[in-house]
Length: 353
Image (cartoon, rainbow, N blue to C red; front, top):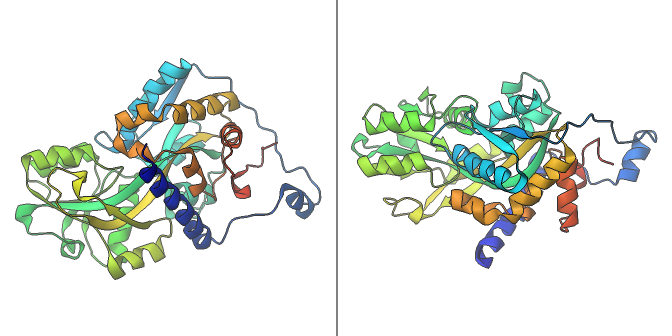
């Protein structure tokens, strides 16, 4: 990784930590001793019945054609090559679904954006019905997920304002796209007819001329978009100015982001838009030695993951501090402390000793 890219990522880490802390009411910076005193001297740790070290794991991703699914394949290869653990990559609905599956113990590793992670853990998202997913733990950082829109050139649509009243593909239910793109349209008063489907399905519909507009969130470049632009001319656009400010005020886990002009073959200008950061999650009962080995192998073999998808250049260890609201797994904490990462007090779980 070049130093310039690392400086960019570390700058993002610092900025997002401040933004997210302010937006979510600030992090708990009290010491463990202060917490004990506030709780009447009771021990802060809790007993957890950890699982045995696994021989096989399920990795929950999202729809085929999206970045999660591609990165999931890279992570599976890493687990098999470095830890001799067989990994089955499974198609899911995306971050919201992955929070639910991980909480229920139905998958071993999942991928999420920070918005659904926070909303799920705290039970504040409408999709949670007030149920807190407090058994989920963050294990490792991934990359930035921007949202951008594209339309067939012959539709005449080339800006977010022009999708008002139109039929728009928004991604699968349970994913970052399927959850947040319709909400963004609502906040902006665009009154769109939202079509929920996976990236590959939407790409096929657009190439066949059945779907003019798609709004999607994933690590860039999105392979499905690259497939579309080979066959059809498309217009790319994002969201900026007052409209962007309005969305970020409503959903503070988003932050301003610029998609570079060379991201796609036919993209000849930068796109101003919004984005969220991604993390890998596990259940709190996951074996600590396995989580430690997973996180260690993940960071020590980052080049292998970058070979899977370019967005993984952002998966530096320091990016774990972008999150200061959802607890980390003790196995992950052990690794990050060993390499000198100073973690916020707020990410130490109740079972930490």
